[in-house]
Amino acid sequence: MAKSPAKSVNLSATDYLAAPEKHSIGPVCAVYGDEAFLKAEVLQALRRHVLAGEDSEFALTIFTGKDVQLREVFDALATTSLFGSGKQLVIVEDAESFVSLFRTQLEAYATRPAKDAVLVLDVKTWASNTRLAKVVAQIGSAIECKPLQERQIKPWLIARTKATEGVRLDGAAADALVELLPLELGILAQEVSKLALLAGPERVIGVQLVRDNVG
Figure 1 (tube, rainbow, N blue to C red):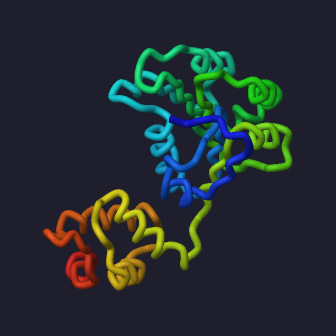
Figure 2 (cartoon, helix red, strand yellow):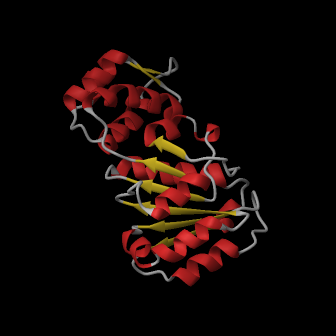
Figure 3 (cartoon, rainbow, N blue to C red):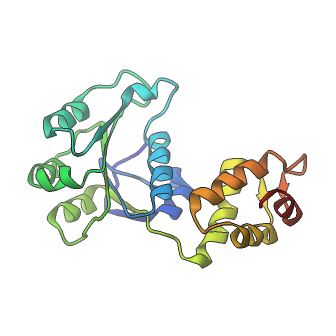
């Protein structure tokens, strides 16, 4: 269950995804950046982090920023959940226009957020010098989803494979994947998922498995 931190939580997507349960989210969270695959993984992890129990999906509301009105979002945040953790999770996707149009009201909300709700704003940019960002910095969190540098891709892929597939990705195998495939995180993750099915009882993806199965 997410708890309101005493101060800002500013995270990279990879740090958050490595151990979501170790990070407090707070009542307002901005998820920002241009790396679509990482952002999708962060939003999915937030759902698991904030909500609990098999009926937790009843406490999740997702809006599209260009289509939703502020009152709809506030009503969803104020709804009392009878399921799961008791918290509401409200995600506004593609929220640039929503934040721009309702910035003043969101600033006011962030000073007195709903007690048992988490508002997630999915945006491309999140300027730290805006009043909204500064208010969120006091009570919530911001998770940056930016493209990884080439040197970061191999350790990310090894860590993600262990966490999501339950398989060890050998270092040489990771090098081969980076060599053979485009450096797009979604493509790499998809290929690893396929290889995990072929890993055998040792649960290891080795370089030969990669060479034999990745064209």
